[in-house]
Length: 241
Image 1 (cartoon, one colour):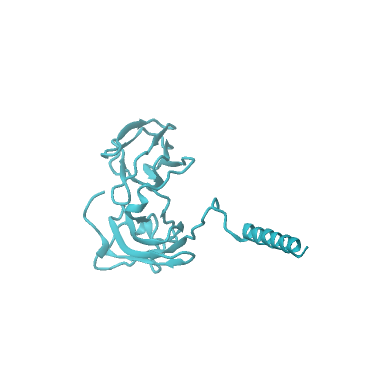
Image 2 (cartoon, rainbow, N blue to C red):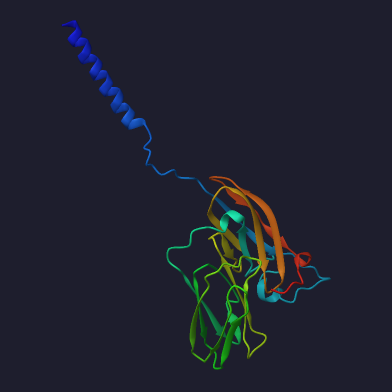
């Protein structure tokens, strides 16, 4: 009789332990969530009276504060080159208005489209000569044209746009293989979210002003890396985009 009771108690204890194991043990199919980090800051231009920058009036609204508009800020690293493409391609519009491209500088992901429109009462043209992708189309007044940019050129080799009929018109399309980039607005601010932890080069390019800047940074899980980018005539390059 004692033997029978002992066996029953032993089986009950085993069932309890097994149940506890099922509730506490992690599932082999559970997805491991990796925490990411954030990078944010402001791009400013520090003027030098002895070396005036003629484009400051277009891109620096507050001369004292110096916030720089239309600066491209992006991460560069070999690990980002094979990043998955976005599920749904985006379409960015560049208008031709008052004999200018508007906006002059855009940044997109590989596979996105750019829709060109012509709001002027004149014939325009859109062309780019790039080893990755070239095109040349005429744009009648009120006309539209879409171009898909399948190949990333990164921050150092943007697609430079021009108009055959009006040589002063110019624009730049930066195409990236990852989502960690931004074009600054009038306040000069940028913010890159959901960045995998690691070491990167943070780069800034202002194609219209021929300004370039780079610095190594470290992104930590769950933290915000704050870095302000200050450029001056010392960061000007004579290399044409």
